[in-house]
Every structure is written in C-alpha cells, then in structure tokens.
Length: 109
Image (tube, rainbow, N blue to C red):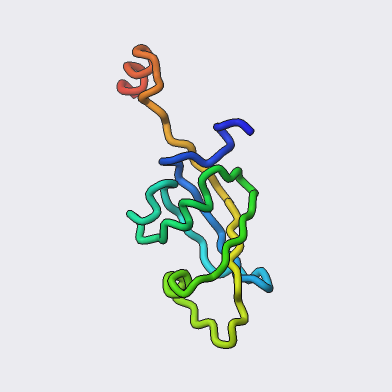
C-alpha cells in the first residue's frame, strides 16, 4: 500500500458515518487527520482514519461519549456501531520534503 493512497497526519479527509445495523447515512465529517479535536471531533475518529485508503470502511462501537457527539438518542439501543467510510482524501503538500528548486518554484506560484 503506497503512502500516496493512505491517510497520514495532516491529510484532509471526508468520512461518511453510517449507523449500524441498517447502514443509515447519519453524518459526513471533514477534518485534517491527526487534528480532529481541533475541529471539535473526538480523537477516536483520528485513530480510526489513520492508515485507511479511499473506499475503505471501519466499524467502531458506539459509546456514550460518541452518542453525545453525534447527538443521537439511542432509545432501546437500536444502534450499536458506527461504520466509517473514507469517501475522499486530499494529500497535503509536503513542502519540507521538496528540493531547494522545488521550494523556490512552489513559492513563486
């Protein structure tokens, strides 16, 4: 798996969140990987998304704090999991890895 297709810190991601069972699309989140808390998103989303590739899904268990975040009243405990689908990934320009000529060219555009 190449790094260009894998979520790493600082990449911007778009996650679709589905309530399970039932695969009901509940919420779409966008944030910079590794910095979810700065967007008021629980850090468990960072933990889940790092290393994923576009189109990959992960399932996480719904905890009371996660229910609070998604503002869901789960009467009867119908929903037990949240399926995360990595819909989109935008890689950050890693300017610190550029050669001097690339840095000059990038700065002048």
